[in-house]
Amino acid sequence: MNKSSKGPDFSKIDSQKKAIKLVSKGELEKCFLLPIEIGGQDIPQNYVFVPIGFSKIKSDIDNNIVAPLAKEGKITEYSATPIYQGKSFIPIAIDVFASNPGEFNSRINIWGEAILNEDEA
Image 1 (cartoon, rainbow, N blue to C red):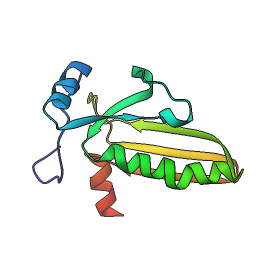
Image 2 (tube, rainbow, N blue to C red; image 1 turned 135 degrees about the vertical axis):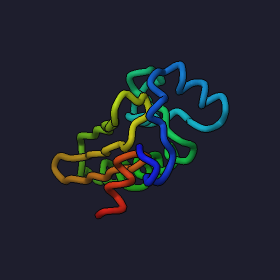
Image 3 (spheres, rainbow, N blue to C red; image 1 turned 60 degrees about the vertical axis):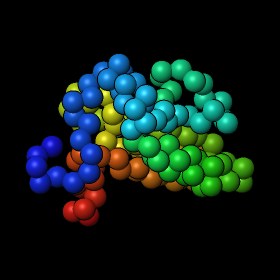
């Protein structure tokens, strides 16, 4: 990111080892893509590292929007897809998508181009 950008810059965090170091410093936390409550596992393929607070944002979407839709039978399919910028191991955004028969989608903008694009919208 250039000097005129806002927010954190995780462009140099290009490995899990570097991400875990920031977890130990309290700057990042684990965020599950498929929530543990609905069958997600605590395995590397099911989590990403995000700045503190973003895990709660995703959890709130999953528990307060997606779960009620599923309980009402309005959605039966779910995905959470991390979006990356450059070689960074930290996603710039996470796209949450639930469907069939209804549809819900939301993007959690975290850093980098995602928050720059958010400001332009």
